[in-house]
Structures are given as C-alpha cells and as structure tokens.
Amino acid sequence: MNKNNIDKLKRPTTWSPVKTTLIATAVSASLLACQPEQKAVEPVTQAKTQLTAKDAEQFVNDAEKRIGDIYEYAAKAAWIAQTYINVDSQYIESKANEEFKLLGIELANEAAKFNGLDLPYDVARKLDLLRLGLTLPAPANQPEKAAELASIESKLTGMYGAGKTADGEQYNLGELSKTLAKSDNPDELLQAWIDWRKVSPQMKPLYQRLVSIANEGAQDLGFQDLGAMWRSKYDMDPDAFAQEMDRVWTQVKPLYEALHCHVRAKLNEKYGDDVVAQQGPIPAHLLGNMWAQQWGNIYPMVAPEGGAGIDVTERLEAKEYDAISMTKQAEGFFTSLGFAELPETFWTRSQFLKPQDRDVVCHASAWDITTEDYRIKMCINVNEEDFNTIHHELGHNFYQRAYNLTQPVLYRGSANDGFHEAIGDTIALSITPKYLKEIELISEEPDASGDLPFLMRMAMDKVAFLPFGLMVDQWRWKVFSGELTPDNYNQGWWQLREQYQGVKSPIARSEQDFDPGAKYHIPGNTPYSRYFLAHILQFQFHRELCKISGHEGPLHRCSIYNNKEAGAKLKAMLELGQSRPWQEALQTMTGSDQMDATAVIDYFAPLKEWLDEQNKGRQCGW
Ligand code: X8Z
Ligand code: ZN
Image 1 (cartoon, rainbow, N blue to C red):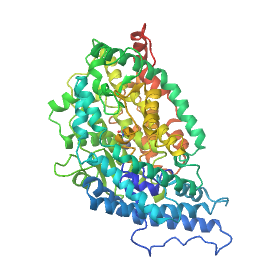
Image 2 (cartoon, rainbow, N blue to C red; image 1 turned 90 degrees about the vertical axis):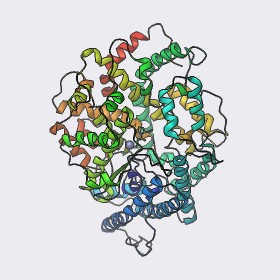
Image 3 (cartoon, rainbow, N blue to C red; image 1 turned 60 degrees about the horizontal axis):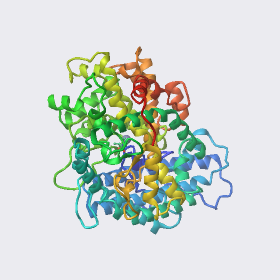
Image 4 (cartoon, rainbow, N blue to C red; image 1 turned 180 degrees about the vertical axis):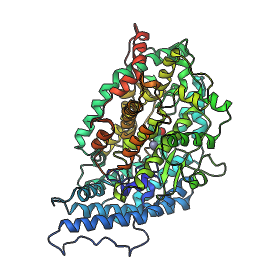
C-alpha cells in the first residue's frame, strides 16, 4: 500500500503512512478490524507490577505480528478507495483505517509503559517507532473519535481526487495543469488557477475538525500538539529538527533568490508591468505549475541564449513512448544498477493511466501491498515531468522491496521520510544528456555549451521547489499549534508563500477560500518536510554515488547508469530500512552524519555564477 498507510504502523518514524508515496491516510487502518479475537498482544496491564525487558520483547514481537496481519487488508482497502472513488469504497477504507488507528493507539500507549526500562537496542527502537507511528492519532479510549477521524480522512482524499465543488461541479486537475504548463495567456492562466481552487472551500470544516481530533490524539501520546509529534520522527529533538531545516534553507537561499530574481525579470519582459512587476513577489499563476512549486514548464521563457537545451517531452513523443514504455525505461535504470526486475504483478496491477469511466486519485504514489506485490498509481502523460515522476515512484518501490525482504515489520520504512522521497530523484539526477544518448532518446550529446541550459532547466524544478518544500509544514505546524486558527488559515498560507517563495496570489483571497486544500498533501495528510529533505539529500546521494562510480568532472554531467558499485552502495542503504537512526544510514552512505546542502551548491555552481551576472543592476528580493 502506499506506504503511507502501512507505514503508519510500520514505521517508526512513521508509522504513519509513509506516504511514501502517498497513500495517505486512509489506509492504514485496520488493525482492528475485524478480528477482535486477534488480541495477539497481551495487554500490559496493572496485573503485573514489574515489567521486564522480556515483557517488552514479547510485546514488540506481538505488535509486529498484529501490524503485519492487518497491513495487506488495509492496503487493499486504500487501493480501491483511491482507484475507484465512491461512497462504498470510502466506507470500507475508513473502516480499515479506523481499525488501524485503534491498533496504532493501543500499541503506542502500551509501548509507553516500558519507558525507563533498560532494553536491548532493537526493542527500545521498535517501542519508539510504535509510539511515533501514526500520522493522525485519535484520542485514547474514544473509539467514536477514531471512527470520525478515519471517515474525515477518506472524505478529504476522495474530495480532492474527485475535484468537485459543493454544488457538484467538477474540475479536472490534469487538464487545468496542462493549461498552467502550456499557456502564455495571462487570462487563461488565471482562470485555470482560480478554477482548481473552487474545489477546496468545502474541505475547510472537515479539516478543522480533523485538526482538533488529531491534536487531542497527539496530546494523549504526550506531545504538545500534532506538529510536535511530526517533528519528533527524526531521531533528534523536535526543536533541533526545526532548526536543522532552517540551517539547510539558509545554505541554499541565496541560490533561490538569484533564480527568483532572474525569472521575475524574464516574466516581466514577457508579460509587462501590469501582469508582473519588476519588484515584489511573483503572481503564482505564471510559473507553469498549479502551486508554483516547480517551474520547469516555463523553462523556455527563461532559457539562456545560445545553448539549446534538450526538449525531453518532444523526444519522448518523437520516439513514440507511452506510459508503459516510459515505466520500463525507468525500471531499466534500476536494473542496470543491479536491482532485480519488478514482479510481473507490478505490470498487471498498477494504475498507469487515468481511467475514463470513474473518479480516481491521480496524484502519483507507490505501494507495497505485500512483500511481493508492488504497484504505482499514476495518470501518466507522455512528458518530461511524468518521466521524472515515474523514476521517483519506482525509487519508492525499490526501497520498499529492499527493506521488506530483509527487515522485520517495524523496520520496514526508510531511514527518515526524506530518504524515501530522495531515492527515485537521485536516480533521475542521472538522466543526463549522456544517458539520453545511451538510451537513444537523442542522437548527439550536446557539447559544453549545453551545460548552462541543462542546469537552468534542473534549477527550475529543483531549486524553485525548496521554499515550497519548507513552507507547507510551516503552515501546518502553525495550524496544529493553534497559532493559526480557521479565521486566518488562508491568510497565514499566503503570508508563508510570500515570505519563503516570494510568490503571491494573483487575486484577492479570503477566509471563504481554503487554498491549502487545493494541494494534495493537505487533504491527503501527507507530511511535507520530507520533500524539502529529499531535495537536499538527493544531491548528497548523487555526489557520493558519482564518486563511487569513478566520475570525474562536474557533478551535473555524472550518470551512474550501469554502475554496479554505485548500485551496491545504494542497495545496502535501502536494506537498512529504518533499523538505525537516519544519521547512521547517511554516514554509511556518504561518510557524514549531517545533512549538507553543499552538494546542491556544488551542482549548480556554474549556474549561480551566470545568474549573478544576469542579475547585475537588478533589484533582487521581494
Ligand atoms: O507528492 C509527490 C510525489 C509522490 S510522493 C509525486 N511529490 C511532491 C508533490 O508532488 O508535491 C514529489 C515532489 C513533491
Ligand atoms: Zn514520493
């Protein structure tokens, strides 16, 4: 299942669904469900006064069994709910999720009873993982609230997937996103931007209620609020984690500001002062993406003169790629590193295309339903963005399989959730012109004059994303702590968009709107800091794997395609699952236990120099 769900139970850090993929929420469920008699875990009650290390070990073993027993069922319920959205599938999914939640809460509370005992490492780590597992905990001993929370989760995910307004009017995110990506008519862009935001206002009351119940659940588990619980999943003090995020952001901020400055100037040249001013934040509908989170689609507007750049979309079309052959090509990268092929059922059970006859959640995700059953769920279009996303999703599947086959249930997760998000992207950093020539997508590799266009194209996605990756959970943390209330949810959202991204709403918004809800991960309840982490880690991983592969020269020209040594190193890290703190996994892989954005800086160094040159005489910032 999506890892999400599963994870909910499985991961330490994340039990919550890991959403590695996104499955979000719902799934998780079931633990309880249907099998009351499945009380494998002997409740640790007051009957015994003295708990021992042996009791703890027994408890952990039983917990793994119970989680393992419910996982497949919960995953399948979630799969159906997301690939056939209707009242019945949502009902079943929410029942499964409810069971899962109840099991999660029971186990988390029981786990806490062993606090203070001197325990073997693995037992202690697994207890921690149990305590932190849920993404949205319900309060203890209030099963009706667990049921309500599970039902809200399913409804919100279904609402986003179906894209309907309160009046039943339907909007198609795929089509609207195409307009955002391709049009250069500001009126058309604005209309598409507004239209998608008509589906989210009806989510607001549900979201409010969800926040209230899940906060209560987090408090019952001993956390200040749900945000503090989410920040506790990183093998370090939660406040220190927040500071780490800020520290790394400070490292990359000058690069982002340089990119922002140049892009704004180019947009101003194209659209004029009335649409985008030379100073101040950029209106959010002009950046080629529904949420202005990745800007690669408007690359042609900002392309350096001279070097052409490779139009991967055009090449995929010319070579008559389709959803399956794109996915096969991506799988081929992983097998070239020494990973085994995906099982046959991957090809028969995945959803590759948007079905015409029903509503589905198109937002891409990767699922491990059992230790043998891996799937992706996407609505693939033949273009560069989706080619990258397929690599991203397969990164999840190969990670899942690596730890599922080697680790016990509670260690089946990534070192931290940023690692899960980083693997496929790390591979996609190796989609260089040299690689494209190797797979015969292009016939000639461009000379060094192609470097700058290539780097600019990459920066439009990878650098542009960074502040967005940071602000989404900044917003949620404030919502969970009560610093933002329903009276200022939307205003708080736009304040952070402006502060971090230098982007503003193209039209006035009010608290009747609920713009956060128009981004999948809010109704889907997928934590978002993971993507910020991933955008730093993937460059660290790339730099290291390139070194192992013997690459010399600039980092952006390295492709680890076919390199078995790099593959072995990667696989060893994936197989650790979440059995060790992420700092240790990072150390094994890179020789350092610190997140470090210098790999991003190194990678983009030639571009930064060029941007600084372009920006001379411009007033940057917003
Ligand atoms: O949600 C995703 C993946 C699935 S985990 C497609 N991503 C984030 C997003 O779309 O907002 C990947 C990049 C950021
Ligand atoms: Zn992902």
